[in-house]
Image (tube, rainbow over all chains, first blue to last red; front, side):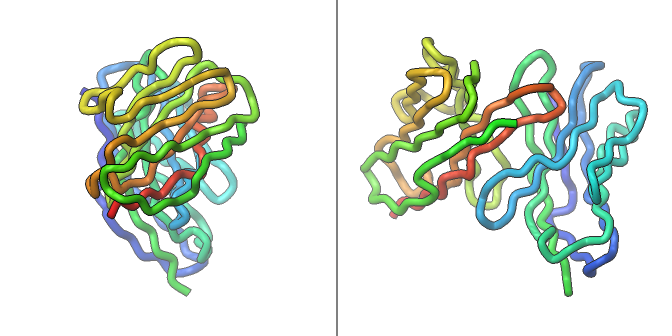
Length: 114
Length: 115
């Protein structure tokens, strides 16, 4: 069965520092997509970054980068130069192969300290 | 990517009543998805709504409790029926548009509290 695991329920980081949020996944399908979403306290879900299983390079989107280690089945999110507005829940998700369904991890609550 | 208008943004409801949540998309989409996020939990897919056909429900969710309408390619509603406090959650609609690597676009969510 496909599964996403986020082992860090909460993280703290100082403003302007970098932080890594962990995500491991399990699937037997060779083709899959991995996503990170941010959920502020308002409840909306904001797409951050995508990594395809066949992508040769790690995805980057501004201050967000994805450390993709396929052999380890990990897709960690790195946020550089943290800002106070980065305080939120972060969810890792995987697209279920052959469908439009996504499996979400349990999330990591990030708090950026001034 | 799409813009989704979801309403209401929040509501407090009495147990035993029903609430209908609306999602309007600014583009035509084949499938719309409804998710539930219980307090402190991750997102769980309730159902997939296709225009012109019955919604497809995930295990643990039934049409009598969560009826869904999909009258056209830009609009869908989810009703939470005969509510109990256990239904207190954030409900989110979502669509997938454009290239696969854009992922879902979500509505702003409906924060429901049942008292």
